[in-house]
Image 1 (cartoon, rainbow, N blue to C red):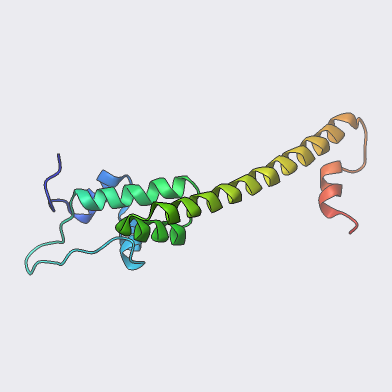
Image 2: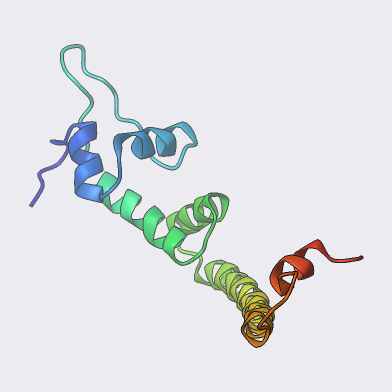
Length: 135
């Protein structure tokens, strides 16, 4: 187990599965605190910092933007489950809309590819023609 505040920024990045610039970025935008730098030596990080970065990355993997992750972090400090649930429900709606858009895109592309497959000799490509459009 990692002892309290024993990791360099590089060690923190490696333990959290990110690069050093990601850690620095999270510090710049206020999503991760920056420990005080001792007179002699480098800043040291601990398990709480790893946990914070992993929280950010997991939330991003669920589709939350960094600003939404910042909201989740703030809500986590006050244990507001209801407000967190509302954010998650909004994210679910957004994901559902994106899925519907992706399904429409898939259907359109399937139709265009089928049109290409159905054409034996043609001067134009149905996909290119659809993208150029007359509208």
